[in-house]
Image (cartoon, rainbow, N blue to C red; front, side, top):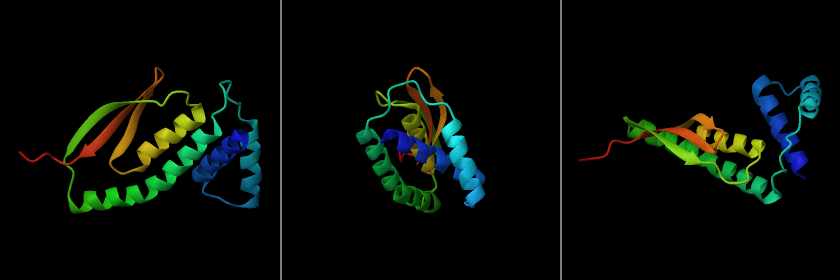
Length: 129
């Protein structure tokens, strides 16, 4: 099951990069997705994938809310924080985590550290004194 989810993730990335949903591009995308090397780590559990997909559904309205907040109440402060990678994450799930963090307008992942940390830049509102 996780093999199908990895294939879908790779195809989604392909379509986002090419912005072309034609039959020829679909065939090329499937070919590329199947030819890419597989991860040698243990595959992510199905519940991890389902949880990540649920987080994506929640992130979409959150992104709109954050965009409106930035428009109505400008955020003038910045902070760089370190966030721990959830244990047992496969490379595909780590990619989804980075995508989710970067998807919302107030945050972006600056760097993924191989020892299990994300360096995250945040735009925050100035604290009132």
